[in-house]
Amino acid sequence: MNISLTKSSSKDAEIIHTMQIKSFMPLLEKYQDYETSPVNEPIEKIIDKINQSFTDYYIIKSDSLDVGGVRIVKKNDKRYRVSPIFILPKYQGKGIAQKVFQILEQMYSDANEWELDTILQEQGNCHLYEKVGYKQTGEMKVINDRLTLVFYKK
Image 1 (cartoon, rainbow, N blue to C red):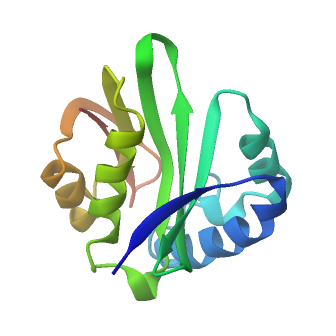
Image 2: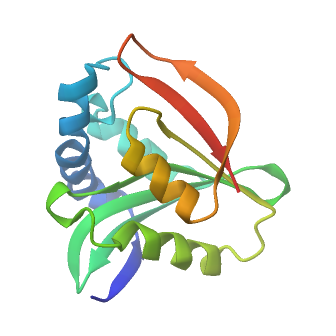
């Protein structure tokens, strides 16, 4: 399995939008976070994010197949935020996201700090981020009675 990242341009927005909906739909159905779910993000917002000067958006490829996406937000002092990262459901659990984090850390080797957030109730996600070296900051944000975001740094 050969994992690679391809930098996106606005012409890739439809592909990213479709994969984002497929990837996050099971979570929307489970947590009913209609206000915050990436499923409900319009394609125009994805185009805006791709075009931001402080953002790098990538399509995640596995053996040249599009399997997900990841956006890196460049903050001050060489701090980088991963928001979002997603893998299509049929490719999850195959080590792709772990490899993506390795690639990102090589690409952004000047990083002083990485940050991200995830759903506290999704123990698989929490385990993945902790496995690749992220630590919970202690900050949490309750979205609804089913879903709490937990924040991580590395």
